[in-house]
Length: 131
Image 1 (tube, rainbow, N blue to C red):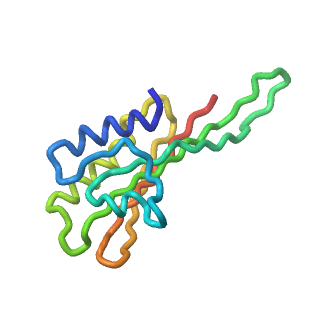
Image 2: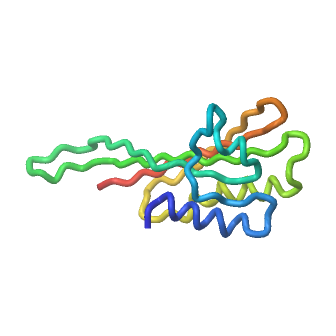
């Protein structure tokens, strides 16, 4: 299963019964407004981008590489009237990093941005493996 699919499945389970739903759509822009700002109280997850770094060159063709996969998740809510369970929601999204296996590094860093009367929670997932 792809990393994005695994995280979406885990976040869907973690947010079941909460005030935030999960979208399988990508967080694209509608006009000049990001979709996650238009459709508040909905979790969106980006495509996976990868960075491949050579770690060890060998004499044969079996060089060792580190593959880092990066995804971004977004939830926008009303800044003045946030869901009562927002801390549980944020915790569930942050902990969904643990559902991805076969990675030596699993990280999720959360940050927020406030614009007008909306607060956007941004989650940066980073996974790394050696191959």
